[in-house]
Length: 308
Image (cartoon, rainbow, N blue to C red; front, side, top):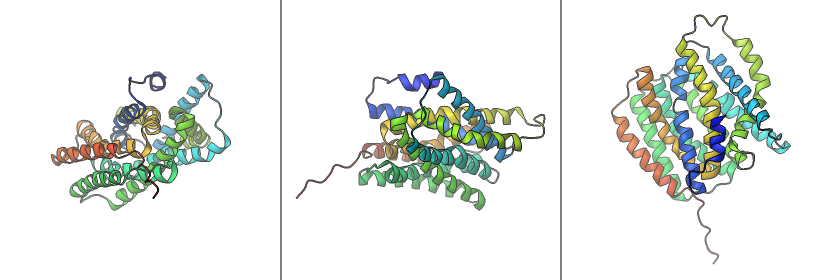
């Protein structure tokens, strides 16, 4: 509740675009813990149960928020886009990544998030009507390329199945991000994710009951904490800041902040899961930060050419 109020009221004494980038960075920091937390959770919980349980918990909280703030129901024209958001970020990305993490470790899977900015930017053009300048695509491609090269260099022994699942997750998530950001312009960021979660609740709640473990006695406390994190932070609070950032700062531009997410995630994977963090990560991170800065500069719509 406090996070919702904070997101709605604070303006950091900044202009709209900068405010959007700050909100987006907060969202990225929150999302960075998603894959390590998922990796911990699937060690004790079934991936399908984890997916539907996190959506059920977040959906219940989202419903309470909508009732407390007495939000009006979305217009009929917004229902299909909200379903797209739900399929992309409530069901698709969590399920595909949970399945992928049964084949690859978090340190490998998290680098695929480096493709999310490019996916989000493409859908931002297709669905959000944005037109970044040509130089933006150069920086976006360089940043994504650096992350992919890093993944290939340190993921030779990875599972093709795990990689395919992660790539599919990136596509559906990019669409869900762009569609949600477009809706946030008139519905509001936290309202979009809350309505998407509520729409999925009639399906997620019965599935959560049906796929629940026979007993939670054998489930470790770490797995339950992982479930709690992905339910509260990854599925709800992170989107409050993320959709607000995309709506204020631009889908294509703010989406480039996701290039930093793999490296925040790798650090967390090393600290929490004791997975090896390659020294080359520092060099790639510097390259990525430079690409994010360049993409930010050229993310605004290119000026129209004067008529001849």
